[in-house]
Amino acid sequence: MALCLTLLAAGDACRKPPPPGPADASAPPLARATLQHLRGTVSVKRAAADDWTAASEGMALLENDTVQTGARAQAQVRFPNGSSVVVGEEALIGIAETGGSPGRDRTDLTVRRGTVDATLEAPATQDLSVGTPAATVRAGREIVFQ
Amino acid sequence: MRTLLLTLALLSVGPARETVVQPKETLADVARRTLGSPEAASELKAINHLETDSVPAGTRLLLPGQERDLAVGAITSAKSAVRQAAQGAARTEASLRLDDAERLLSSAHYQEAAAEADGAWRLVSQRPEDPSHFAIQVADDGTTRVHVDSGIPVRVEAEGHTRAVSPGETVLVRRGEAPGMPSGPNVAAAQSVLEAPVLLSPPPGLRLSLDAKGKGVGPLHLSWRAVAGARGYLVELKGPSPQTLRTPHPEASFSSVLTGSYRWSVRALGVEGALGPASERALDISTGNIKLEVQPPDWK
Image (cartoon, rainbow over all chains, first blue to last red; front, side):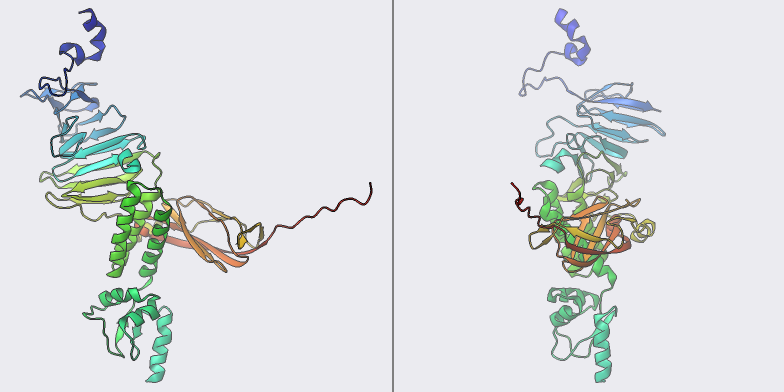
């Protein structure tokens, strides 16, 4: 319990047991990004949930979470490596799995509908992969140093 | 008739847009005579909608205009930049775009060829430390539009094909299709906003003395004021050792040149290979190093 209190700041770490290993199907979902600068109606649907809930400033986004923005709404999704996307109005995006699906290339997020404006402040050290129904867009260090 | 043919032949050397096939000339011969290379026969074939390489003497053939010079210049500069670029994904993609540019040139699609070559050049000229901004727009049917505002190019992959999209370019991808060709702002519009560079150094009328270097002298440094909206500059040195280079910065250096009288010109480079007006200046270059020999003094 004491350990749990110490780690309270780590968010989800205390609510669920530590990840036992890659082969364990019960491994907790990983925080992949943070939701910031919300404007208007922004909703999140957790991977394991059936309902949409209102997004909140600083909310951690986990693998397979979905974010939806309403009319004249906007939100920024910031990834741990510093890259970010501003999700425009009436958009639907998904946070991708860390490892990606078998047979498919890894992406950080998928845009199913709407517009996102992406920024890499330091492309030499950051990268971002965005999947859409038609294409995969890759930017950053991969293209520079691959 | 002979006089007429001679006149037409002479005209074909200059800015004429037509030439007449001479007796026993093949299309490759005409291409060599008018465009400087027998390989350009495919361009003449495309422009004139010819089905074979044999054309009867006396046939009038249309010749490409200045847009070909721009495309050839863009390809030459891009080749040079790719050769000098470090190994990596950017260089590989630039090489692929150069191949596309040459294919487009051979089919007389000059504007598209210049745009591809310019895209290749930008791929190996961008600095990775610049922030990167791009937008992705997905329509209800999944059609994806990718526009790169600034920074390094991004890669758009679909159906096993990859397309590099440079700043200022937009690519459209339809579901189940390969990425389309990148398109940019209107070339004419881009040309109209580019101004002629203000040349700074060397100043006009200067007789420049440089140190001997190899068979010539050098280095020769040129600089000019940056032009708003320019993505780079095309620098031409005309004289005993003519050279052309493309640089992203408002300065250029030639490591070694032969002595003599030169004219150097600079043009700002806009999007899709658009070139602004040139600024030109004369320059005389001579050997400047004077061998100093200090004799031992007579007195002791």
